[in-house]
Length: 115
Length: 115
Image 1 (cartoon, chains in turn yellow, purple):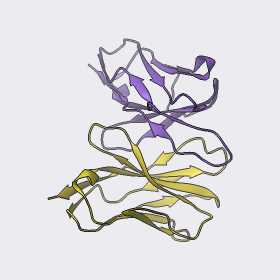
Image 2 (spheres, helix red, strand yellow):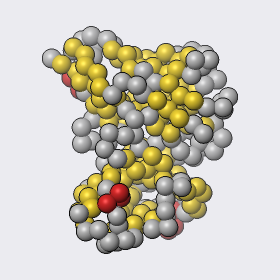
Image 3 (cartoon, chains in turn yellow, blue):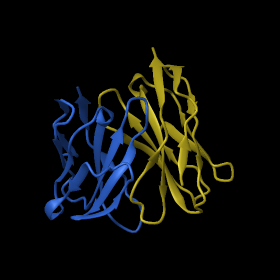
Image 4 (cartoon, chains in turn brown, green):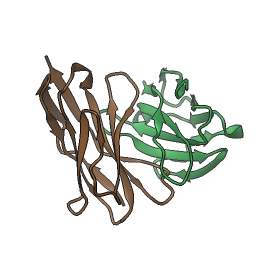
């Protein structure tokens, strides 16, 4: 079974600063995919960034980057130059390579960006 | 790309009643997913369709739940004899198929409240 753990229920950061959200997962799979999704208040979930487990290079999307440590089964999200619009719930998600038919989500981290 | 559409946005009903939700995926997406999200938790997988075929169902999907995707277009999720524990946000997502996992695009969800 796959499990995803986000140990930080809530975090705050000042506008323009950097924040890192943690995620660990447990799996016996060797090939899989990891994602971060953002869910703004009362709005739909949006993909932030994705990482293929077979790639050693950490994914980057503008101000968002990940630190993927496969051996440690860790997948943290770094948000640089935080903006007010980054305020949201952030979910870490795991997907197996075989079939890739569903996500296993963590419980989420609520990020508050303060002006 | 008009996005994933879900109807209704909110549903309030008495315990024991039947409810039906609808999801219209992005038109060219052949994969469709249903998730359930309770307060303070990440979404949990319920079921998955590829075209009109329902390929996987979670153990969370009891006999009171049924999902369909006639003609591989929109999907419906029906809950019969609703219970208090069914209160949750029901999310629909869709994606393209292919050799590699494609991002799942989520709808706004249907929030179900059982009185």
